Length: 188
Figure 1 (cartoon, rainbow, N blue to C red):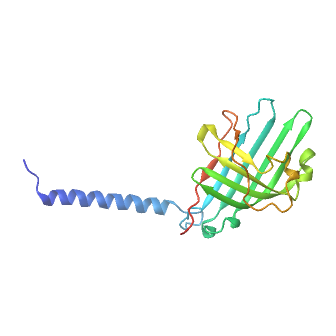
Figure 2 (tube, one colour):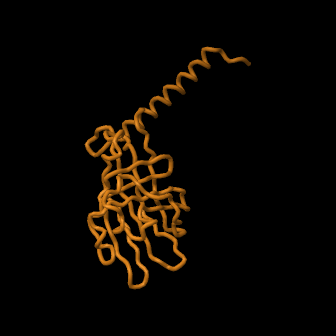
Figure 3 (cartoon, rainbow, N blue to C red):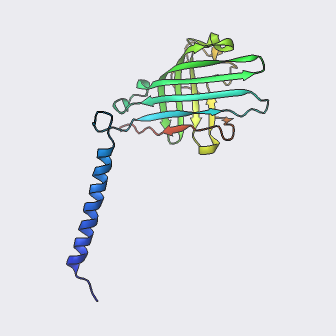
């Protein structure tokens, strides 16, 4: 039994109409609280993880860094915060930084910011720019930081440029990481 070309055309047309309707519905569903269409942000780095250290150091990094769509071509337009803490025995402290640059590529992000709060042994880091690199590898994330060769964030040079860090050489403690990198797609 042969099918007519007309019937095949109608089935293909109906399938195309269904696909267009579903795609349009998805676009409408992506709205902000005011009902306006939401635009994908240009880049982001979010999440929290503890680093693995065999000596038992308690080290945590948390990110909430974003580059809005309208700043797509300007990574210096990034905003948000990140924090880190490091404790070992009676030494340690925590710090928070205001984001001043975010660049992502694939599953790797480099973020920098100026430390705005610090306590205990990180109090002297206030006012210093620091940078951090994250490699989002699912359950096996990695991280690096600008002060890796210096020892402490407060030893960072005063003229450190934005979005500078080290390779992601540190391992995240198993079961603790949920870093998420949204890749940057600048206009070319």
